[in-house]
Length: 343
Image (cartoon, rainbow, N blue to C red):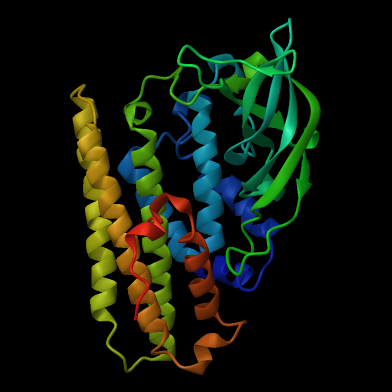
């Protein structure tokens, strides 16, 4: 079993997560924290899973990001028919991953199958996936099918790795080992049994009732906090005489708050109540403001570290680039219309 030091050593300067780390991931079942126990998963509670995501992001940005996104995709085991989920997750190496974008079409056939075509971007963990998940517009005779509200019908599909072509086009400054590549699919037939709808569940757990917006907000926040914790750890090595205690304490404070929010959500849902829109908005507003403050403070600390922190082969530089690559995620990025760029 690898420890934090081992994983950091393996991934320092790496452009891909090594086979040794991937083996460790599968042996420990890290991709199955959200998979129900009846399918061979770990069946973590919400708070328990968030603690794990924080720890992984604190270990290494690419490591934490890949695990968060792929474990998050394995969550869809709850959305697919039980017999299919049981079949797919009998293997300890099953790893879903894909894109949340609608990047292609699914042409409906007369035999409960679909013909998939398209291009999808930003599929984290692509080199290690056993199955790609994707969203596609449903068409029939080449024309989009509309729902009762007049919107295009969208459905999610699961496609085996060997039926997709990976495009290794990740050029970002950070998350270099996360394998966040594009992929294409051309004229692949998929049974309706290997499709799903986000808000339709075949399981009956508290986790199923957590609003997707809240799930996304909190899983991203613990990643940012984990990388921030690693960042300040590396900063102390460079400037041991500087007092970064308040930064570290703030990370701990906000991690406790995020975990407290998760506990509250679980308690509300266990009482068969819903998470109101106001509560969801409050959580999102908190996450947006926390991400803004975190980014500002990381920049402030970075400017105090001197030229050593700019070495492209240094740990601090890698964490810095990982954090600001992850922080570019649209989830918490405010509208430019709300910002003042004057100085």
